[in-house]
Length: 174
Image (cartoon, rainbow, N blue to C red; front, side, top):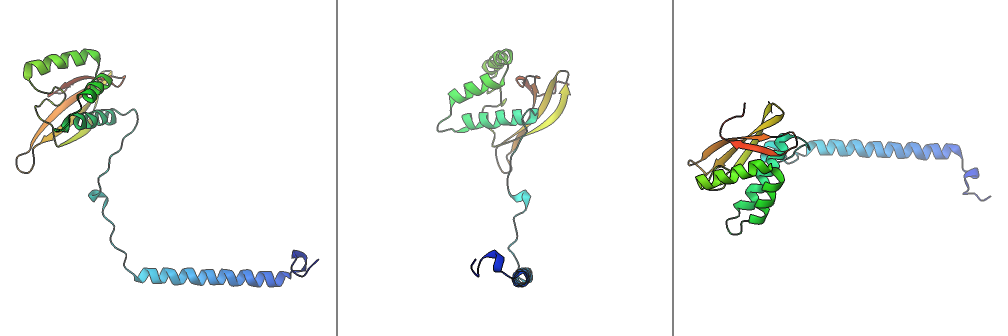
């Protein structure tokens, strides 16, 4: 055995080295903490200043918000609206019966039936309005214009239990 093998090491020396290491680390950490405490960190932006979005699978509010967000993005690009995506979104999110009724409404009124308007909102919010029989209702608030010339439209969106929109109107289904 050589002098550096574990069998020849003295336990006292190992303990002294370990104690010194602990002391050095402890002093270093306490010095860092006190030094950091005296330096003012820049203020973090508040949560209200940072936009966020989220959702939960299976929630009506999330489903309706996903639909309106994607729909407005599809038609809202005035330079290059995506009519194909608009059609796909309607087919995916709306019941077939409601899609037919919506097309008839649009023909009569000369407006987009999903938005109940001829132009695209700059902002929208979706809130839960509770159960209506076997369905669920969400309230979509669309904001048009900017500055002092804003107009809000409140829509009531009825979602069937299989997550398809079966009605959009300006009055509640309650």
